[in-house]
Length: 159
Image 1 (cartoon, rainbow, N blue to C red):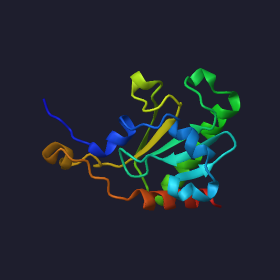
Image 2: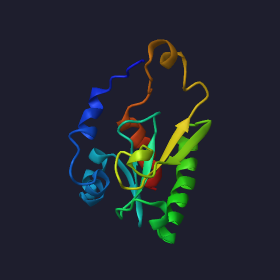
Image 3: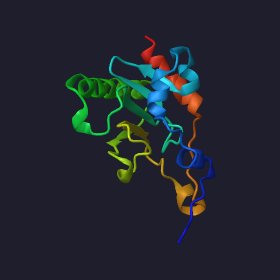
């Protein structure tokens, strides 16, 4: 059996805050959005960079309300999630030129969600983004910093 060591994630697993990280982020002063990697604050949901991305530009769309199930979202929340997906697709196309996207949601801790607060992942993908590094070196290379990705995406929402 191969073991993948990722000690930087321990804080989110063992030393987890008793409160929800998404609720904490949403409640913080918007002047701290860059520090918290919040790309955009909408009416019902917000967009935040994933601190442990699968690829550069990996974001999450999160409702402000602390909800666990998809069925708990109201119509306006569902609509805004999909409106933001459309805007993100256009933004990525202008700023990063991905060849495709993965869009998904993990409903509940047992389905892989780190927190019991529904959130949607959008991961831009490029041909060849899974290169030889994971195969030969068991290492994933993410070619852009979180800050640089944040600034690219934030620029699309400031207009």
